[in-house]
Length: 245
Length: 328
Image (cartoon, rainbow over all chains, first blue to last red; front, top):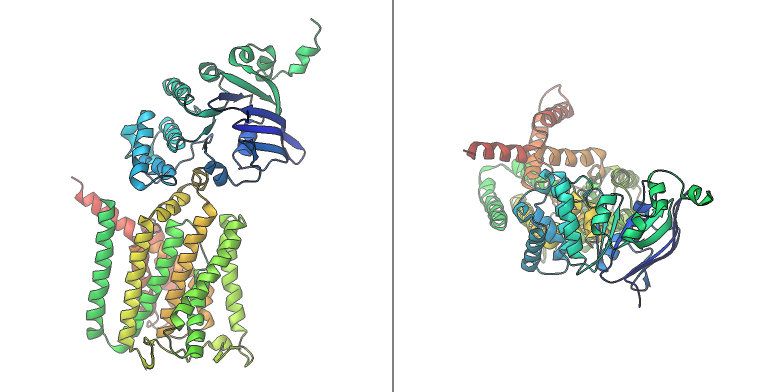
C-alpha cells in the first residue's frame, strides 16, 4: 500500500554540515508518528524539508507516491498537509476567529469557513478567545490558536513542530489528549524533544541523531533503548556498542 | 458591523467628494482650482501607496515611477491619438504593466523587503535619468516629443468623451479628479473587504503562516502591487492634466514625499494618507510663498515633529483620542 507521506534517502547539507543524512521513513493513513532527537539532531531541518521551506540536497519526499520536492510551501499545504511551526506563526493583528477562518476560507465559503473555524476553536477549548486579538494572547493560548488554525481545514496529514513548547503542564496534558483524539481522523507527525510528552502520545517513534535515523520502533521499545538515553545524555551510542558485554 | 462601517465610510467619502465638486468651483479662483486638482491627484497617489504599504506591507519607494509613467503615457497617447478618451486607458495600462513586470521579478525572484525598497527606488531613478536624457529630436514616440528635461509642456487636457474639439475646463477636470479620488477610495475599501484583501492583510501580518495555509504569497503581493501601480498611474494622468509631464514626476523628491504623506496620515489607514497628502501639499505651497525660507526646511521640521508627536500618524491618533473620550 502506498504511504501517505514518505521520504527516501532525504539529505540536506549546509556547506560541509550534513544536517539530515539519508533519512528514509514512511507514514501511513491515520498514523501517529513522533520524531524525536536531542538538540541538533536535524529534526527541524527535516521538518522544513517536508514542508517545502528547504529544498533537500538529495533524496525524495513522496506524498501518496508523488515526489513533492521543489514544491513551494503553499503548494505542499494545498495537498492537504497542515503545518504547525515551532514558534507560533499567527496573524497577530487579526482575531483568533478571523485567523483560523482564513485557512478554511480557501476551501469553503465565508459562512462555512466561520462555522468551521468556531468549531475548531471549540474543539481546542478556546472558543472564548474567538474575538481576541491574537497578538495580545499568552504563549500557551497562541500555541492552541495555531493548532486550531492547522486543524480547521481538516488536512489529511498534520505536522507539528514542538507543539507544546512553552506550554504549562496543564496545557501540555490537554494538548497530548487532543493530539491523541485528532489522530483518529488524521495522520500526525509530531517533532519533539520532550520525552514526557512523547510518552503520553506516541505510538511509533523515530529517533534522529546527527541527521540519521538511530532507531524506529514502538514507543515503549524506543524509550527504553539505552542508545536513545545515550544520545539524549550527549554520549555517542557507538561507545556503548563498542564495549564488550 | 465592520461591513456597515466600511459602507458608511465609503458613502461619506462619495458624499464629501460630491459636495466639494459642487461647492469649491463656485468659491475658488481658477488658480486655486488648479491647485486643488493637483492636491487631489496627489491624494490618489498617496492612496496607492497606502494600499501597497499600509495593507500589503510592501514598502515601495518607486510609486513615483508609476506616477510618472501614467503621466507620460497619457501625454504621449493624447498627442498621438488626438482624442484623450483613448489616452486614459493607455495611461492606466502602461503603469499597470510596468508594475506587474517589476512585481513579478521581485516577488517571484524572492527579493527580500530591504532589497525591494532599493530596487523600486533604483528603477525610479533610472527612469528619471532616462527621461532627462531624451531632449533630442530623435526622442519622440509618434507625434509626441519626450522633451528631455523640459518634459512635454503641450500635454493636452482631457476632452469631452469622443469629442476631441471640446476640452474640459479646469473646473470640470477638478470634478473628474475628485471622482477618481472617491472611486479609488471606495475601490480600496471593496478590495480590503474581499477575500483577496483579507489574504493580503494576512500576508502582511505573517507571510509564512499565509503560505502554510496554502496561499501563494507571491501572487497576492503581485496583485496588490499591480493595483497600486495602476492607481499611481491614474494619479499621474490627473497630474498631467493640471500641470504638465516632466522628469520631476520620477524624481527622488516625489518618491520620498509619498512615503511622508502616508507616514503622517497613518500607515495602515486610507483616509489618513489622503489628508496627509493634501495638508502637506498645502503646507509646501504656503511655505513657498515665505521669503528667505526654504520650504524643504519647514517640511523637514514638520516631519520630525510629526514622527515624535504622532508616531502612529494622524488618523490612528485621532481615532484613539476619540475612543478614549467616548469610553466611560
